[in-house]
Length: 292
Image 1 (cartoon, rainbow, N blue to C red):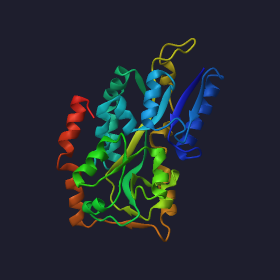
Image 2: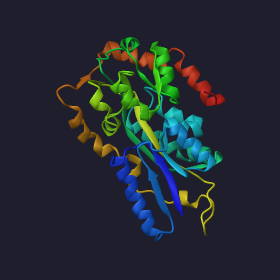
Image 3: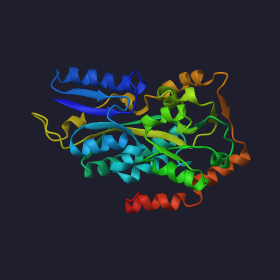
Image 4: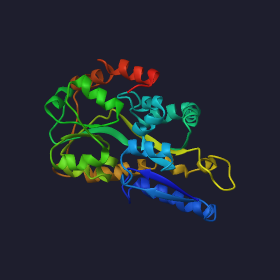
């Protein structure tokens, strides 16, 4: 049997190297009875497409961020709220404590968490310097179509975002449709966005968290429903990207690429935008009412 799993991660990226290593191990241990077929680089669309295809059985699994996970289980968005879990230590502590609760929520929706992962610290990358939130009002920030958090974050700032899917961002940077993107060092390099921007905020607002989810309603010869999902991924899946971050800073530290550090005065403004205005009340409403 072959399980079909989609990802936005480009072929050859650190994420795909981990997934391919797991694929080789799994196929060897099952003597070829269970195989994995990965669709990297957004070849199956954006994360909303992964979720739709998993629901109708066209895909068996997806490697997604919290944007994709929140389409299946809305409370997952709590892990990426701005200035909430902004260090790896905080994120790991919450995921460890809440793992069983999160996993049950996925099971109730007909899915299973196979592995957790993260993709670096969330920052703003731009073509012009950004020191304070109001600077973004004169710019064209990218808004991921289904990212509940940053859509509301930019609403609080008063910026007019441009809604695009992830595969559309690089062309958008090329044509100046967008000039600010939310990313991390790892994703900016992997998706080549860093070649189209010049500045990066010094502070981070969160960690780009995600993982692999799979449908539990799969018919596997000689196995109970969902047993394929219970196969243990390699221990490195949870933090596979972290050793790569330091190496990627060397790529980002080129002459035309500058890191903008917020002064104490503007850092407070960023925190106010993250926690103030209508942001938190609306996000809490989304979590409790299950509405976008």
